[in-house]
Amino acid sequence: MSGGDEVVVALDVGGTGMKCALVRPDGTTVHTERHDTGAQRGPEAVVGTILDVAEGLAGKARADGRAPVACGIAVPGVVDEARGVAVWSANVGFRDVPLRELARTRLGLPAALGHDVRAGGLAEARLGAGRDAGHVLFVAIGTGIAAAHVVDGSAATGAHGAAGEIGHILVRPGGPRCGCGRTGCLEAVSSASAIGRRYAELSGAPTTAAQVAERAAAGEPLAVEVWQDAVEALADGLATGQALYDVSTVVLGGGLAQAGARLFDPLRAALRERLTFHREPRLVAADLGDEAGCLGAALLALDTLVKESR
Ligand SMILES: [Zn+2]
Image (tube, protein in one colour):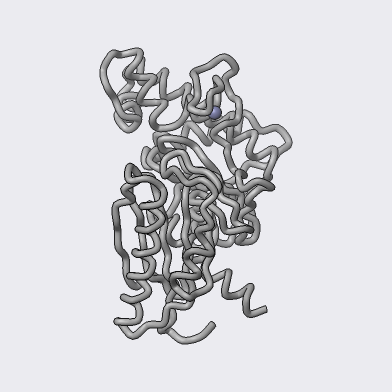
């Protein structure tokens, strides 16, 4: 790849919004846009919007004298990256949508389809907090908990496009009910929404995870208890992750990671207690914020070009 005028079109499609960008081969962003997903309109309308926005971005690139050379799209749910199909998504409603082929046809450019969290992990591992680490586990903690295992700049997808569902590791048998239908999953205890919900149940007042972190730091007993439970369950999940993946760096992203030292200090200690012969990974906060998924989509697009030139 050569020339500073080449860009890829990148879209990160979420349940409520799309983060979009034109990105150079070196990973720098030259233009960003945000659009509503409008998921309530149904999956067909969402696909139409994705293609319109992607085409618009390619047009914007050309108008600015740049050459769009590929397109990358990241979506939530179960994604078959090898076939380029959005298999299933709870919040966008996709059912077997051949999004890669649709984008390739509409734009006339090579295209890649990826999973949002795996794309975010890819970006953190190659451009962000996990740079130069080689073996990285990226864990996004927000309304749910999901992970991406990235080895030498490539995220494992799993045989069915569903790798990285670390949020559904069983950490508290018989514990709180999870969105997946089982009880005691990691995300039913340690996700930002679970922390807020648990505290609200016990105190009777609606509360966010950030408020629980703040109150725990101030020594409020109920908040201390809820926060500690969440941190310990998270350490259980990460210890399982380390037993499986033996990474050098764990990158924590999503809303909960913004609690900073209130999360990282006790979590580091709790994880250390749980590891015996396994090596302790470096535990760091994500660098790229909510742009990670979009940058990851750009990297997938660039990888497509490298594959095609072979
Ligand atoms: Zn679950």
